[in-house]
Length: 156
Image 1 (cartoon, one colour):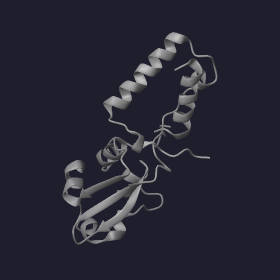
Image 2 (cartoon, one colour):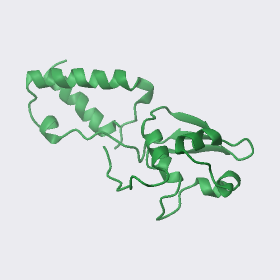
Image 3 (cartoon, one colour):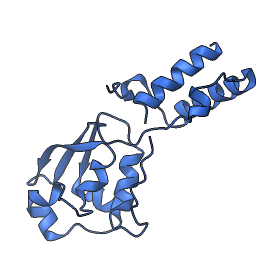
């Protein structure tokens, strides 16, 4: 890769990759573990049983969450359970209240993304920095098992 190839790759990552948004979520938000779980996902579909969600959360779902499908969708101006996956770029694709299963589909419209600093994108990258960036990005791809299936379509 040339310096310009690295710059082009970083531009593509910045435009379509995974820009961290400061949501201001408190660490003690009861659904933070579920939020973190979805933050680590990159697959197009995530299938979970209610019991698996309870295990992730570390507590049991309420009776209404187990019986009322409305409890699974976002509510305006509330940090409801649905925000845990919604803010990470997932939505409910299928909710089966009888079988106690849910399929989440990636939309990535609101997903966490990487912000590449303009100091990297808008300037010549020194050769040593180029190689460091390349090695680090390869490390991240390997560490998190990212694949081309995980690529988020470019926006705009």
